[in-house]
Image (cartoon, rainbow, N blue to C red; front, side, top):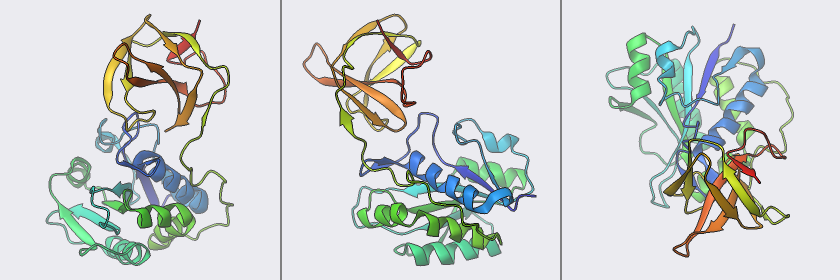
Length: 269
């Protein structure tokens, strides 16, 4: 039986906080996967394709295991740093909360309070209403260079902290080479041409990332002439074109699978 249930924050098109070429959604999923790989059958990893906040997944969650929701913080202030644990206002921290707060703050120090109470966070309230043993953990600040580097370079150590706090013996599962994904690479390989939109609405952004601002959209059947350029970021292949106003714009062509797919958002004609 699982001793720990992991929820990875954001996702399903919501990148969370972004900095240094990384998104919060991708980073906490990398951490969640390592916790599962090292913890084996004693860890249950919630569906990572979902946004558990947006779809209210906790309202339908059936588990007897304590739950941890993984996040990273951001403030826009370069000096803000450190990890902490969030629990429901009015609740006393249990042994899991205390152990996580102590170990996470030692691993990534900087917060004045290791345990913070909140009453306005949706999943905190949903879990409390259902009697689920739940806490939300902020694993440092993604927009702090030191915290981000510590997270990326020591992701297995961080994963083992979670396992230790819940009485799970970590295995020796090898660390995958993709554990810390650097800023995505750009390339040009005969990619350009006329593409047709296959979905009802496709966002146009001012940067090749889910963090880019949405500035327009394409509808199904509309076409766009993409440059001989693409970039892989946030799990998608991004194409580029120049708008009538002269601005450079970016669209997600499809998921980054290594080849064109029938369900891509843009199909080359």
